[in-house]
Picture 1 (cartoon, rainbow, N blue to C red):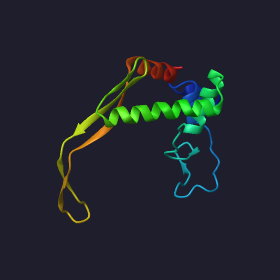
Picture 2: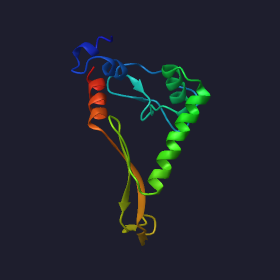
Picture 3: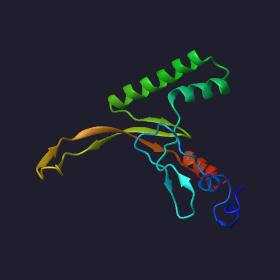
Length: 144
């Protein structure tokens, strides 16, 4: 652990990640490395996410299924959720969360370039609401 991390209220992994000195990465278009007041460089707004391929690999490893079987199951799940939402149904998964369709009413908006007021039509959008168990799990993982 960095000597700076011992003096910070944040301990553990987050403090270590904040205090790492990241070397410039070649090939990052539009993202310049920044330096904060401590002289530590970082890449701003670097997203950390899991792709479908990575998710399939992890599920296959944990369940013992082949990647092809896992991909079929995951595709079946996503297609079923899409169909249910398009029909206006909600999908509740106990301990994980619920997928719902939310109605957005029509509204007025302004085109910032021209100043013209435009009418935006009403629409239905899919939403996800995490369960209390999922929220608690994420909170406990953050505090470790």
